[in-house]
Length: 505
Image (tube, rainbow, N blue to C red; front, side):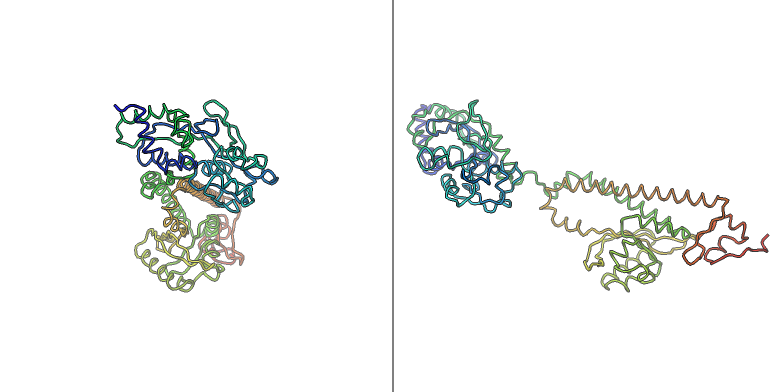
């Protein structure tokens, strides 16, 4: 077995003394973010955490410090940074940006939209000098940067004001440097999957035995190595900010959404179709009762959907106000008695006419999607639910339809892959729609019951009850009128007035 001293010399010579690693350590550019990414992507295992050194102070954790000039009376807390110029080291520097970014996130500050300008200086010292020179209003750098610059006589700490100042504890001791963020473990040394375990243990022993006086430790500015720390805090911050390797964390593909929520989507679809079917059924019942046209109109006006009905010639004979206002853009009187071909662009009218003829040839229900030109000039994509209805003698009389604007749904289908992070919101919206439809059904059923009770009450009343339209035309008469006039109900309906039939038996 190789002795620890010789092994240490080999590790230091081949790794720590390499120009890239040495430069990164000295400049504080080697971050734990890279270590977490490598653990995630390459299944590396931790061996040791570095003990960093600043002067005579040794620590195994670090963080970020957020600062401004001491004469900036307008900047005292994180919220004051909105609309200001902010300088950081670079977008991948954990101590020089990511740590501060996490605190800004928790304060509900989006640095990419809330700052007047976000500057990356390329170095920790440069970030400090940018704030002191007035190039930036505030900035961030790794902990111990300010203390090192002050110790070297390059800045005066009295010229610096710390934002979000907090106390931290490292290894049960108070953290010795100015701090604005959470503390995170220092960078680590790890082994690649497949590395010999004997060699890994030998390297670990060699690293743990390195003293602060060792020539390599002094060369790179560290005090040695400790057992590997818990890096969950690093992973949590990267996950929260959706940074590598967690940039896709929480996102789902369209296939995953369908697979995950297939039963929920199936149940919602069945319930929606059931409620729509029930609505069409209720509409069919009321259309069969031609003498209840006044009550029927009240019913469809209470429904928020766009409703219309036609005769077998394709002529509009009624609908609710929402349909005439939003779709036709005309008064009811301007629409009644006209066909779709006379009212809408030909490309739409031909589709409606063809679908109507198809439904009348095969009475029942029909569901299809089509473009519709709304009154405001916009072309919407709608789902159209139609059903035939009969008169009192069971003769085919016409078609009743409900329009459902699904333009937004169609657009959402195109954007679903990029919007799947909103899946939970869409589920909640679907539940709200279901509740609204259930309330609509309950109101409709309650209205049907109330109307039936009213009709039975009026029919059985001893009072003489007649309902006419504004022109005096009789729309309804109860049995008491029949008895006193001698005319049958059918003889009175549609007449302006009724004279007593003296010849009645």
